[in-house]
Image (cartoon, rainbow, N blue to C red):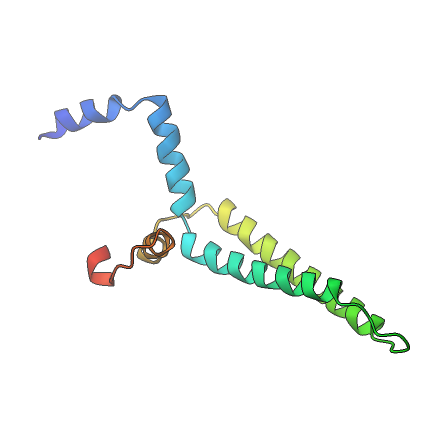
Length: 117
């Protein structure tokens, strides 16, 4: 295949194919970092639910500690959410080997670095 055939193949991409390529590119860019941040977010969310459901014992003033913990977890979740949004808005987004490896692990396929290269 020479360069003229490559140019012809590129021009034949439909708008739907281009949209799908953009979707996959957006999904894979910084996937590794985003997946770790999302896991941390989910952990904080579970803790927040557990703390919110916990009923205070009568006569014990744990409400202040519980309120402080809820506030702390909410702030941490807000920071994690901001970090996730920043990753999506970065200008220098690239698909790295770690992103590809993490995406394959999420699909249930474990690959070595050698296989990813």
